[in-house]
Image 1: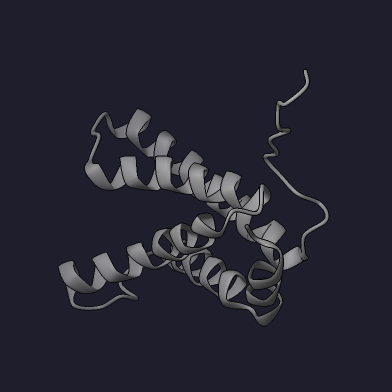
Image 2 (image 1 turned 60 degrees about the vertical axis):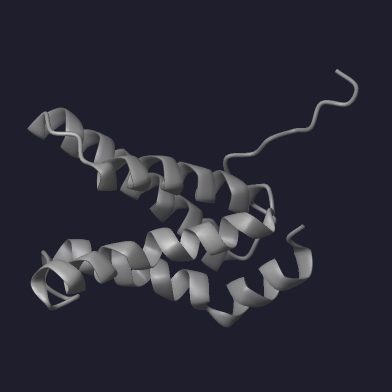
Length: 121
C-alpha cells in the first residue's frame, strides 16, 4: 500500500554489533516472558524488560534515535537494580551476567555508536 512504511524486526545492513544487540534485546524479552510463565509472578521489571527490550530492538532495526537510548537503559537496568538491591551489580548467575555485559559492550562499541549517530533519525 502506498504510504505504508516497512517495519523491520532485524536490519542486516547495520553493523554486526547492532544486529547482535537487537538479538540480545529480543532474547532478554523472551526469557522475561518465560520467567513470568514459569514462576506465575509478574513484576514491574518483567514488563519493563519485555516491552522495553522489544521496543528498543525494533527501534534499532528501524534506525530510530530514541531506541538507542532506550536500549542503553534496558541494558544497564539489571546492573543498576542488582547494585541497589544487593549492593553488588555483579551479584548474578554467571551466564546472565555475561549476557548483560555483552549487551552493554555491543551497544557502546564505537561501531554501534558511530552508526547510530550518523544514520538514526
